[in-house]
Image 1: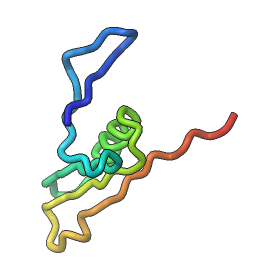
Image 2 (image 1 turned 30 degrees about the vertical axis):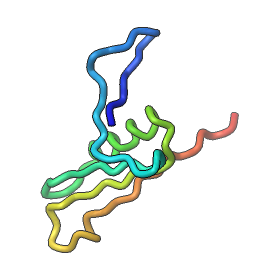
Image 3 (image 1 turned 180 degrees about the horizontal axis):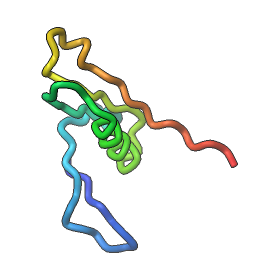
Image 4 (image 1 turned 90 degrees about the horizontal axis):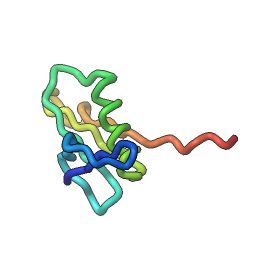
Length: 81
């Protein structure tokens, strides 16, 4: 699924491409890295903010046991003012 990026009313060519979307509410971001880094979680959070979806699953396939490579990323609700 492609996400267009609009800045100050202008749609930019450099959009984002999500790996998978489940039922229009969960983003699945796939990785195959030695270990996941904070930048990977930041990428998932960016996708959540742009889509408004509540949850993303960050799945790293470079682990001996797959369940150890799954991280849930939630979009924190905005704090009340």
